[in-house]
Amino acid sequence: MKDYQNPSFQDRMGRAAAAKQKAIDALKARPVPDAATLAARREAAEAREAASAEKRAAAKAAKAEAEAARAAAAEQEEAGRVSSEEERKAARDARYAARKGRK
Image (cartoon, rainbow, N blue to C red; front, top):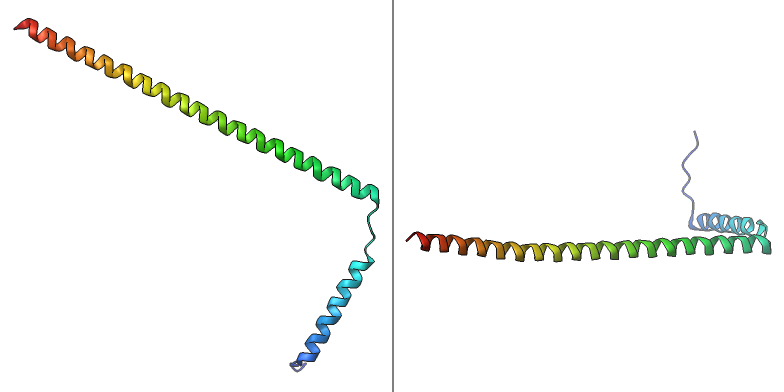
């Protein structure tokens, strides 16, 4: 059975430096993309951004349309409430007049 080793600070620093160097070497070994690939990526990013902007504009227009519909419904409800109040007043006046006519 292997004994537990308590590595010193220098051991840990050495391992960290080796891991960092290995990551840097792997990064440097990656091939550099050519101009055509970069242009294709740029065009794809611009297309995504345009689609996203169009989607945001459509959502904003839908929200504005829904708000306008809500405002129209509230206005129509208010107009209906006014007319129903007028109708109630007219009915009350008719009842009062009928009561006065009976006396």
